[in-house]
Length: 420
Figure (cartoon, one colour):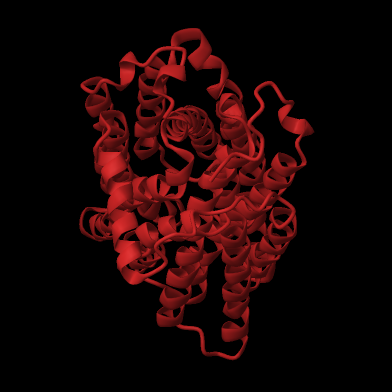
C-alpha cells in the first residue's frame, strides 16, 4: 500500500479524501455513542436485565476483538480499507434496525440482544481497524498527529451529542426505538466514507494458509518491536479494568445514585467537551515536553481523577455536576493519551502492515475487555456497585506504574527516528 498523498506540507483540510473521512468517522462515532447508551438501556429498562446480564452484554459486544480482529487486519491489508469501512457501517445499520422491530413484535429478549450485540461488535472491529489503516494511507506521515487530533476532535463533538441524545431519546421514545437514530447515523457515514480514496491492498496470499501467515507476520512486527509490544500490553491491562468500570458505571449511575436516563446521558455527555480539549492539546503538548512525557502525564491525569467517582453520593445537582467534571477531565487526559499512543504506532508501522498491526494491537488491547466486563458485572453483584467502582479504577491506575518502568517516557519531541 502506498500513501495517496506523499507530499509533505500539503494542507490537511485542503484534501478531499481527509475531509470525507472526517465526516464519515464523525457520523459513525455519533451512532456508536448513541448506541452505547441506548443498547444497554434496552436491557436495563425494557428487559429488566440483572447486573450479570448487563455485564455479559458488554462482554459479548467486545468478544469480536478476540474472535475476528486478527483476520480483520489481514482483510484490511488485502482489500481497500474504504470497502471495509462502508460494509461495516451498512452492517451496523441493518442490525440495529432489527431491535425496534423485534421489540414491537414482542420477540425481543436478552438472547436476541446478545446476538445483535455480537454482530454489531464484529462490524465495529472491522470499522475500527480499517479507519486506523486508512488515515496514514491518505495523508503524509508528518500530518498523522494532526490528522488523528482532527478526527478525534470531531468524534468528540459526536460524543457530546451522542450520549445526551441517546438518554433523551430513551426518555421520549423508549430504548428500543432510540436505537434507530444510531442506525441512521451509520448511513451518513457510508455516503461520506465511500468518497474517500480507494487505497489498494497487498492482494497476495488470499487463502486460508495465507491468512495464517499474514496474521503471523503482523504478530511478529508488534512483538519484534519493544515500543509496539509494550504499548499493546499496557493497553490490554488498562482496557480489562476499564471495561469492568464501564459496565459497573452504568449500573452505579442508574441503581446506586438513581439518576434518570436523561441525567445519565448528560453525565456521560460531559466526556465530549473533555475529549475536544484532549484532541486540541494532543498534538501541541508533545512538541513542548516530548511524546514520552506526554504519555505518562496524561495517564496520571486520567486515571487519577476517575478515582473520585466512587466518592459521589446522591442524585442532586451537585452530584450531577461533580460527575460531569470528573468525566470532562477524564475525557481530556484520556483522549490525549490515546492520540499520542496511536500516532507513535502508526508512524512506526510500514504501510503494508497498517491493518495487521492495528488489528494485533486491538486484539491484545481489547481481547481482555470481555473478561473485564464480566468481572465488573460479577463485582457489582458481589460487593456492590460503589466498592466495585473503586476496585476497578484502582486497577486502571496501576498502568501508570507499567508505563513509568517502560522506555516509552524517554521518547522525545521528534518521531522521525521512529519511522519504519
